[in-house]
Length: 284
Image (spheres, rainbow, N blue to C red):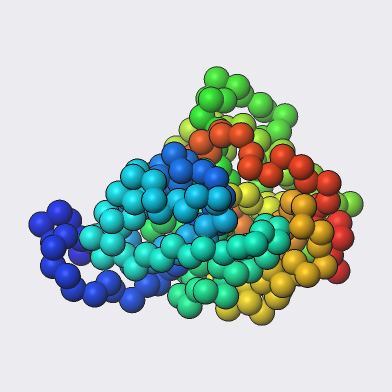
């Protein structure tokens, strides 16, 4: 039986099931994108999950009618939902660390506010995390405007895990770093089309990192320090998600899974000035 309550139960008023996953969404200045992201979550049946949104917008996102409507839908479906104001801004690493501190579930999904998940994506991620017994799994976000843009050279780096997911050390000068173009455009969508996996099945593969949609075992991320390195970074930075994943990968491994049900909305970035990559400053 799915944990998502159908419309016949929306007025039940019963408390949510204990969350096996908390979806952590940092947001700033996006309402249409955030509403779309929340709509994707509202289409997920299992596992039981909660949602924490950390809002650094000038105008509170929960005042937007579309965002407010989707928050109400999730609440009616039996999902514990919190929207937290978190100001002033101190950079993305601090924003993510705040969300991690607010979470308590065994698994946490860091989901960017411009990513739509297809139905069943959350269940696949959670199944992979539990089955692989690794530190994290991720779905690389796909830009579907590139469906006609086949890139065979970038796809050559695709390498499935054929046994247990093992710890790896990735740095800018390592061979593993060269896997990063694999997540460009719609590369994984093209790879999935050739693999022809049975519906609901997934295949783990080796990554440099995964952007936009990553599920961690919470204890693994906390043990690796979370995003506590934010104190060593200037406010304007990028790559904080990369560094956190690298630290977890060194201890417990990490993987991407294909097919990816994560769709990038391809909106302009809200962080246009990013002079520092976190993994170059605090990679040790």
